[in-house]
Image (tube, rainbow, N blue to C red):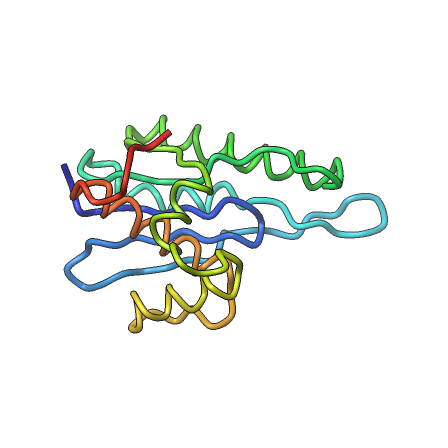
Amino acid sequence: MTDRIIGIDLGLDGAIAYVGSPTGPVVWNMPTVAVRVGNGKRRRYDTQALLRILLPHKDGHVLAVFEDVHAMPKQGVSSTFSFGYGRGLVEGLLVALGIAYEIVTPQRWKGTILGGTQKDKGAAILRAHQLFPQVEIGTKHGRAEALLLAEYGQRLQRGGANGHIE
């Protein structure tokens, strides 16, 4: 059991949060790079930067938690592929580094952490500000959700997450 948790909000606008450090929580925006595609540019995951964030935590005394994501109705093919690619990338890096991870449904973690609220982006940002006032969250939904996923992981480790990881 560990109180050192990495919360990962998948997606190009997501984030990675690390809680349980003696120096306090840390949040990184999901690292991305701009690549040329045809006549334009697109953002892609920066695999090397993501690896640099996760690498210091490969000692086996940390748990990563991320959301069980899937395609949504009316979501574009390109964004669905990108989201799935991000999940596979993160899961592959965690496995390669030997970092234990749990995948949780949005209903489970939001029910625990955001219970009694609208469970929307605004509620997530507000709750993250309440739980982590020392962290710069701003209005970044991904930063808030990464912190809240880490909070869910800590509660799970302490036996107070109202259920189990799915």
